[in-house]
Image (cartoon, rainbow, N blue to C red; front, side, top):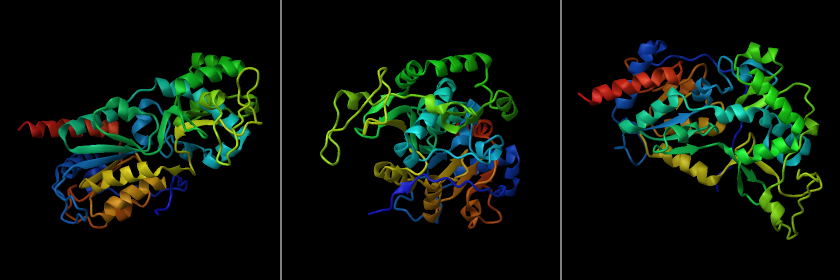
Length: 382
Protein backbone atom coordinates (compact mmCIF):
# COMPACT_ATOMS: atom_id res chain seq x y z
CA UNK A 1 0.00 0.00 0.00
CA UNK A 2 1.40 3.42 -0.97
CA UNK A 3 2.27 6.00 1.66
CA UNK A 4 -0.22 8.85 2.32
CA UNK A 5 0.51 12.03 0.40
CA UNK A 6 0.53 14.99 2.79
CA UNK A 7 0.33 18.67 1.98
CA UNK A 8 3.50 19.87 3.70
CA UNK A 9 5.07 23.26 2.91
CA UNK A 10 8.75 24.06 2.57
CA UNK A 11 9.10 27.46 4.26
CA UNK A 12 12.83 28.08 3.84
CA UNK A 13 14.40 30.43 1.33
CA UNK A 14 14.66 29.24 -2.27
CA UNK A 15 17.60 30.08 -4.55
CA UNK A 16 17.12 32.55 -7.42
CA UNK A 17 16.15 31.05 -10.78
CA UNK A 18 18.69 29.81 -13.30
CA UNK A 19 17.37 30.65 -16.75
CA UNK A 20 17.02 27.82 -19.27
CA UNK A 21 17.88 28.53 -22.02
CA UNK A 22 19.99 31.53 -21.06
CA UNK A 23 18.04 33.97 -23.21
CA UNK A 24 14.82 33.09 -21.32
CA UNK A 25 15.74 35.93 -18.97
CA UNK A 26 13.78 38.33 -21.19
CA UNK A 27 10.10 38.27 -22.09
CA UNK A 28 10.88 37.62 -25.75
CA UNK A 29 13.34 34.87 -24.86
CA UNK A 30 10.84 33.24 -22.50
CA UNK A 31 8.07 33.31 -25.12
CA UNK A 32 10.29 31.78 -27.80
CA UNK A 33 11.55 29.09 -25.41
CA UNK A 34 8.00 28.16 -24.41
CA UNK A 35 7.01 27.93 -28.08
CA UNK A 36 9.87 25.49 -28.64
CA UNK A 37 8.83 23.56 -25.54
CA UNK A 38 5.17 23.21 -26.51
CA UNK A 39 5.88 22.42 -30.18
CA UNK A 40 8.61 19.86 -29.58
CA UNK A 41 8.03 16.18 -30.47
CA UNK A 42 8.00 13.68 -27.60
CA UNK A 43 11.42 13.30 -26.03
CA UNK A 44 13.42 10.22 -26.93
CA UNK A 45 14.07 9.81 -23.21
CA UNK A 46 10.41 9.16 -22.34
CA UNK A 47 9.99 6.05 -20.21
CA UNK A 48 6.22 5.74 -19.98
CA UNK A 49 4.05 3.55 -22.19
CA UNK A 50 2.43 6.28 -24.28
CA UNK A 51 5.35 7.96 -26.09
CA UNK A 52 3.24 9.18 -29.02
CA UNK A 53 1.18 11.62 -26.97
CA UNK A 54 2.82 15.00 -27.55
CA UNK A 55 0.54 16.93 -25.18
CA UNK A 56 1.49 18.89 -22.06
CA UNK A 57 -0.04 18.90 -18.60
CA UNK A 58 -0.03 22.20 -16.71
CA UNK A 59 0.79 22.25 -12.99
CA UNK A 60 -0.31 25.58 -11.51
CA UNK A 61 0.14 27.36 -8.19
CA UNK A 62 -0.81 30.54 -6.35
CA UNK A 63 1.33 32.75 -8.59
CA UNK A 64 -1.13 32.47 -11.47
CA UNK A 65 -3.88 34.03 -9.32
CA UNK A 66 -1.92 37.05 -8.06
CA UNK A 67 -3.16 39.12 -11.02
CA UNK A 68 -6.71 38.39 -9.80
CA UNK A 69 -5.90 40.24 -6.56
CA UNK A 70 -5.14 37.19 -4.41
CA UNK A 71 -2.14 36.76 -2.13
CA UNK A 72 0.51 34.15 -2.84
CA UNK A 73 3.10 32.51 -0.61
CA UNK A 74 6.54 33.34 -2.03
CA UNK A 75 6.15 36.07 -4.63
CA UNK A 76 7.44 39.62 -4.28
CA UNK A 77 4.61 40.49 -1.90
CA UNK A 78 3.99 36.89 -0.80
CA UNK A 79 3.09 35.95 2.74
CA UNK A 80 6.30 34.06 3.47
CA UNK A 81 8.31 36.88 1.91
CA UNK A 82 6.81 39.66 4.04
CA UNK A 83 5.83 37.82 7.20
CA UNK A 84 8.57 35.47 8.36
CA UNK A 85 6.48 34.35 11.36
CA UNK A 86 3.42 33.33 9.34
CA UNK A 87 2.20 29.84 10.08
CA UNK A 88 -0.93 28.40 8.42
CA UNK A 89 -3.29 26.31 10.47
CA UNK A 90 -2.63 22.57 10.30
CA UNK A 91 -5.24 19.86 9.86
CA UNK A 92 -4.81 18.20 13.25
CA UNK A 93 -4.99 21.56 14.99
CA UNK A 94 -8.24 22.44 13.19
CA UNK A 95 -9.83 19.08 14.01
CA UNK A 96 -8.84 19.01 17.67
CA UNK A 97 -9.06 22.60 18.87
CA UNK A 98 -12.28 24.59 19.18
CA UNK A 99 -10.38 27.84 19.76
CA UNK A 100 -8.25 27.22 16.67
CA UNK A 101 -11.42 26.76 14.62
CA UNK A 102 -12.85 30.02 15.99
CA UNK A 103 -9.71 31.83 14.91
CA UNK A 104 -9.69 30.15 11.51
CA UNK A 105 -13.33 30.90 10.74
CA UNK A 106 -13.13 34.50 11.98
CA UNK A 107 -10.21 35.20 9.66
CA UNK A 108 -11.84 33.32 6.79
CA UNK A 109 -15.09 35.22 7.38
CA UNK A 110 -13.25 38.50 6.84
CA UNK A 111 -11.45 37.27 3.72
CA UNK A 112 -14.24 35.41 1.94
CA UNK A 113 -16.08 38.38 0.40
CA UNK A 114 -13.16 39.62 -1.67
CA UNK A 115 -12.05 36.09 -2.52
CA UNK A 116 -15.56 35.34 -3.76
CA UNK A 117 -15.63 38.54 -5.80
CA UNK A 118 -12.27 37.86 -7.48
CA UNK A 119 -12.28 36.54 -11.00
CA UNK A 120 -9.91 34.63 -13.30
CA UNK A 121 -7.29 36.73 -15.07
CA UNK A 122 -5.59 36.70 -18.45
CA UNK A 123 -3.33 33.83 -17.36
CA UNK A 124 -6.30 31.54 -16.70
CA UNK A 125 -7.92 32.42 -20.02
CA UNK A 126 -4.62 31.82 -21.81
CA UNK A 127 -4.67 28.32 -20.27
CA UNK A 128 -8.13 27.89 -21.81
CA UNK A 129 -6.78 28.98 -25.18
CA UNK A 130 -3.81 26.61 -24.88
CA UNK A 131 -6.30 23.83 -24.34
CA UNK A 132 -8.15 24.89 -27.50
CA UNK A 133 -4.94 24.51 -29.52
CA UNK A 134 -4.72 20.86 -28.48
CA UNK A 135 -1.28 21.35 -26.95
CA UNK A 136 -2.53 20.89 -23.36
CA UNK A 137 -4.29 17.78 -22.11
CA UNK A 138 -5.33 18.95 -18.63
CA UNK A 139 -4.52 21.12 -15.64
CA UNK A 140 -3.45 20.03 -12.18
CA UNK A 141 -3.81 22.98 -9.82
CA UNK A 142 -2.73 23.49 -6.23
CA UNK A 143 -5.07 26.47 -6.04
CA UNK A 144 -8.35 26.38 -4.16
CA UNK A 145 -9.94 29.46 -5.77
CA UNK A 146 -11.84 27.58 -8.55
CA UNK A 147 -10.56 30.02 -11.18
CA UNK A 148 -9.46 27.29 -13.56
CA UNK A 149 -12.85 25.60 -13.68
CA UNK A 150 -14.50 29.01 -14.21
CA UNK A 151 -12.11 30.09 -16.97
CA UNK A 152 -11.99 26.82 -18.91
CA UNK A 153 -14.82 24.43 -17.97
CA UNK A 154 -14.12 22.31 -21.04
CA UNK A 155 -10.44 21.73 -20.19
CA UNK A 156 -10.11 19.15 -17.43
CA UNK A 157 -8.88 20.50 -14.09
CA UNK A 158 -7.80 18.37 -11.15
CA UNK A 159 -7.92 20.36 -7.90
CA UNK A 160 -5.05 18.73 -6.03
CA UNK A 161 -5.70 20.60 -2.77
CA UNK A 162 -9.48 20.87 -2.97
CA UNK A 163 -11.57 24.04 -3.17
CA UNK A 164 -12.93 26.82 -0.97
CA UNK A 165 -16.35 27.00 -2.63
CA UNK A 166 -17.67 24.30 -0.29
CA UNK A 167 -17.27 22.92 3.20
CA UNK A 168 -17.17 19.28 4.18
CA UNK A 169 -18.31 17.71 7.46
CA UNK A 170 -15.61 15.79 9.28
CA UNK A 171 -18.21 13.28 10.44
CA UNK A 172 -20.73 12.61 7.66
CA UNK A 173 -18.54 13.95 4.77
CA UNK A 174 -21.45 15.82 3.20
CA UNK A 175 -20.59 19.10 1.51
CA UNK A 176 -22.19 22.46 2.17
CA UNK A 177 -22.00 25.66 0.04
CA UNK A 178 -19.64 28.31 1.38
CA UNK A 179 -22.01 31.15 0.42
CA UNK A 180 -24.69 29.75 2.73
CA UNK A 181 -22.14 29.19 5.46
CA UNK A 182 -20.98 32.80 5.17
CA UNK A 183 -24.55 34.00 5.74
CA UNK A 184 -24.77 31.86 8.88
CA UNK A 185 -21.46 33.19 10.16
CA UNK A 186 -22.74 36.72 9.66
CA UNK A 187 -25.96 35.95 11.56
CA UNK A 188 -24.11 34.28 14.46
CA UNK A 189 -21.54 37.09 14.73
CA UNK A 190 -23.27 40.46 14.28
CA UNK A 191 -20.38 42.50 15.70
CA UNK A 192 -17.95 40.83 13.30
CA UNK A 193 -20.42 41.34 10.45
CA UNK A 194 -20.58 45.03 11.27
CA UNK A 195 -16.79 45.27 11.28
CA UNK A 196 -16.62 43.46 7.94
CA UNK A 197 -19.13 45.89 6.43
CA UNK A 198 -17.05 48.85 7.58
CA UNK A 199 -13.82 47.27 6.35
CA UNK A 200 -15.31 46.62 2.92
CA UNK A 201 -16.69 50.16 2.71
CA UNK A 202 -13.29 51.64 3.58
CA UNK A 203 -11.44 49.47 1.06
CA UNK A 204 -9.32 47.94 3.83
CA UNK A 205 -9.71 44.45 2.38
CA UNK A 206 -9.23 45.36 -1.26
CA UNK A 207 -5.57 46.29 -1.38
CA UNK A 208 -2.81 43.73 -1.76
CA UNK A 209 -0.08 46.32 -1.21
CA UNK A 210 1.72 45.35 2.02
CA UNK A 211 2.24 48.90 3.28
CA UNK A 212 -1.42 49.77 2.73
CA UNK A 213 -2.52 46.59 4.50
CA UNK A 214 -0.35 47.40 7.51
CA UNK A 215 -1.74 50.94 7.66
CA UNK A 216 -5.21 49.49 7.86
CA UNK A 217 -4.16 47.03 10.57
CA UNK A 218 -4.60 43.87 8.51
CA UNK A 219 -2.58 41.16 6.83
CA UNK A 220 -4.04 39.32 3.87
CA UNK A 221 -2.76 35.77 3.40
CA UNK A 222 -3.46 33.11 0.76
CA UNK A 223 -6.76 31.20 0.63
CA UNK A 224 -8.89 34.08 1.93
CA UNK A 225 -7.20 34.37 5.32
CA UNK A 226 -7.23 37.85 6.90
CA UNK A 227 -5.16 38.37 10.04
CA UNK A 228 -6.43 41.07 12.37
CA UNK A 229 -3.84 41.46 15.16
CA UNK A 230 -5.27 41.45 18.70
CA UNK A 231 -8.78 40.61 17.47
CA UNK A 232 -11.10 38.84 19.95
CA UNK A 233 -11.18 35.59 18.01
CA UNK A 234 -12.48 33.66 21.01
CA UNK A 235 -15.85 35.42 20.63
CA UNK A 236 -16.41 34.06 17.14
CA UNK A 237 -19.05 31.38 16.61
CA UNK A 238 -19.66 28.92 13.76
CA UNK A 239 -22.57 26.58 12.90
CA UNK A 240 -22.73 22.81 13.07
CA UNK A 241 -23.18 20.53 10.08
CA UNK A 242 -26.91 20.73 9.22
CA UNK A 243 -27.04 17.09 8.12
CA UNK A 244 -25.56 15.77 11.39
CA UNK A 245 -27.72 18.15 13.37
CA UNK A 246 -30.88 16.86 11.70
CA UNK A 247 -29.90 13.18 11.78
CA UNK A 248 -27.03 12.43 14.19
CA UNK A 249 -24.89 9.70 12.60
CA UNK A 250 -23.50 6.59 14.21
CA UNK A 251 -19.85 6.93 15.17
CA UNK A 252 -17.09 4.37 14.63
CA UNK A 253 -17.54 3.01 18.18
CA UNK A 254 -21.23 2.35 17.54
CA UNK A 255 -22.51 5.24 19.64
CA UNK A 256 -24.82 7.95 18.38
CA UNK A 257 -23.12 11.27 17.60
CA UNK A 258 -23.96 14.19 19.84
CA UNK A 259 -24.21 17.62 18.23
CA UNK A 260 -24.99 20.41 20.68
CA UNK A 261 -25.74 23.98 19.68
CA UNK A 262 -26.42 27.19 21.57
CA UNK A 263 -29.72 29.08 21.42
CA UNK A 264 -28.80 30.64 18.07
CA UNK A 265 -27.46 27.53 16.38
CA UNK A 266 -23.71 27.74 16.97
CA UNK A 267 -21.71 24.53 17.52
CA UNK A 268 -20.66 24.11 21.17
CA UNK A 269 -17.77 22.22 22.65
CA UNK A 270 -19.82 19.49 24.29
CA UNK A 271 -20.42 18.07 20.79
CA UNK A 272 -18.44 15.13 19.49
CA UNK A 273 -19.37 15.45 15.80
CA UNK A 274 -20.75 17.82 13.17
CA UNK A 275 -17.64 19.96 12.59
CA UNK A 276 -17.45 21.66 9.22
CA UNK A 277 -14.08 22.35 7.59
CA UNK A 278 -13.27 23.97 4.24
CA UNK A 279 -13.20 21.41 1.43
CA UNK A 280 -9.49 22.01 0.96
CA UNK A 281 -6.52 19.86 1.84
CA UNK A 282 -5.10 21.67 4.83
CA UNK A 283 -1.40 21.61 5.59
CA UNK A 284 -0.63 18.29 7.25
CA UNK A 285 -3.70 16.62 5.73
CA UNK A 286 -3.51 13.66 3.34
CA UNK A 287 -4.62 14.01 -0.25
CA UNK A 288 -7.20 11.33 -1.02
CA UNK A 289 -6.00 8.25 -2.85
CA UNK A 290 -8.31 8.81 -5.85
CA UNK A 291 -6.98 12.36 -6.33
CA UNK A 292 -3.38 11.22 -5.88
CA UNK A 293 -3.84 8.47 -8.48
CA UNK A 294 -5.62 10.80 -10.91
CA UNK A 295 -2.75 13.28 -10.70
CA UNK A 296 -0.21 10.54 -11.37
CA UNK A 297 -2.21 9.29 -14.37
CA UNK A 298 -2.40 12.82 -15.77
CA UNK A 299 1.40 13.07 -15.56
CA UNK A 300 2.02 9.62 -16.99
CA UNK A 301 -0.19 10.16 -20.05
CA UNK A 302 1.65 13.19 -21.50
CA UNK A 303 5.06 14.06 -22.89
CA UNK A 304 5.96 17.12 -20.81
CA UNK A 305 4.95 19.23 -17.81
CA UNK A 306 4.72 23.01 -17.66
CA UNK A 307 4.70 24.55 -14.16
CA UNK A 308 2.91 27.91 -13.91
CA UNK A 309 3.09 30.22 -10.90
CA UNK A 310 4.39 27.63 -8.44
CA UNK A 311 7.59 27.33 -6.44
CA UNK A 312 6.80 23.61 -5.97
CA UNK A 313 7.55 24.19 -2.29
CA UNK A 314 4.66 21.94 -1.32
CA UNK A 315 5.75 18.30 -1.52
CA UNK A 316 2.51 17.11 -3.12
CA UNK A 317 3.25 19.31 -6.16
CA UNK A 318 7.03 18.86 -6.24
CA UNK A 319 6.71 15.06 -6.36
CA UNK A 320 4.57 15.33 -9.51
CA UNK A 321 7.27 17.35 -11.28
CA UNK A 322 9.83 14.86 -9.99
CA UNK A 323 7.69 11.99 -11.32
CA UNK A 324 7.63 13.64 -14.74
CA UNK A 325 11.40 14.09 -14.66
CA UNK A 326 11.89 10.45 -13.66
CA UNK A 327 9.69 9.52 -16.63
CA UNK A 328 12.15 11.26 -18.95
CA UNK A 329 9.91 14.24 -19.61
CA UNK A 330 11.11 17.78 -20.29
CA UNK A 331 10.02 20.25 -17.59
CA UNK A 332 9.03 23.86 -18.20
CA UNK A 333 8.74 26.38 -15.35
CA UNK A 334 7.20 29.85 -15.63
CA UNK A 335 7.36 31.28 -12.12
CA UNK A 336 8.57 34.51 -10.55
CA UNK A 337 11.32 33.67 -8.06
CA UNK A 338 12.89 30.42 -6.92
CA UNK A 339 11.58 26.88 -7.30
CA UNK A 340 12.26 23.92 -5.05
CA UNK A 341 15.06 21.74 -6.43
CA UNK A 342 14.78 23.33 -9.85
CA UNK A 343 18.34 22.63 -10.99
CA UNK A 344 17.78 18.87 -11.06
CA UNK A 345 14.96 19.32 -13.58
CA UNK A 346 17.40 20.63 -16.20
CA UNK A 347 20.47 18.45 -15.73
CA UNK A 348 19.97 16.74 -19.09
CA UNK A 349 19.39 19.89 -21.13
CA UNK A 350 22.12 20.36 -23.72
CA UNK A 351 24.07 23.57 -24.24
CA UNK A 352 22.25 24.23 -27.51
CA UNK A 353 18.77 23.66 -26.00
CA UNK A 354 16.34 26.31 -27.24
CA UNK A 355 13.47 25.16 -25.07
CA UNK A 356 12.48 21.71 -26.32
CA UNK A 357 14.55 20.03 -23.59
CA UNK A 358 13.33 22.27 -20.79
CA UNK A 359 12.49 25.88 -19.98
CA UNK A 360 13.01 28.02 -16.88
CA UNK A 361 11.83 31.61 -16.95
CA UNK A 362 10.86 34.07 -14.23
CA UNK A 363 7.84 36.09 -15.31
CA UNK A 364 4.08 36.19 -14.84
CA UNK A 365 1.67 33.88 -16.62
CA UNK A 366 -0.80 36.68 -17.42
CA UNK A 367 1.97 38.52 -19.28
CA UNK A 368 3.70 35.66 -21.11
CA UNK A 369 1.02 33.05 -21.85
CA UNK A 370 -1.31 35.22 -23.98
CA UNK A 371 1.66 36.05 -26.22
CA UNK A 372 2.53 32.36 -26.49
CA UNK A 373 -1.05 31.52 -27.44
CA UNK A 374 -1.19 34.24 -30.07
CA UNK A 375 1.97 32.97 -31.74
CA UNK A 376 0.80 29.34 -31.59
CA UNK A 377 -2.44 30.28 -33.30
CA UNK A 378 -0.61 32.35 -35.91
CA UNK A 379 1.76 29.51 -36.71
CA UNK A 380 -1.13 27.07 -36.84
CA UNK A 381 -2.83 29.17 -39.54
CA UNK A 382 0.16 29.00 -41.89
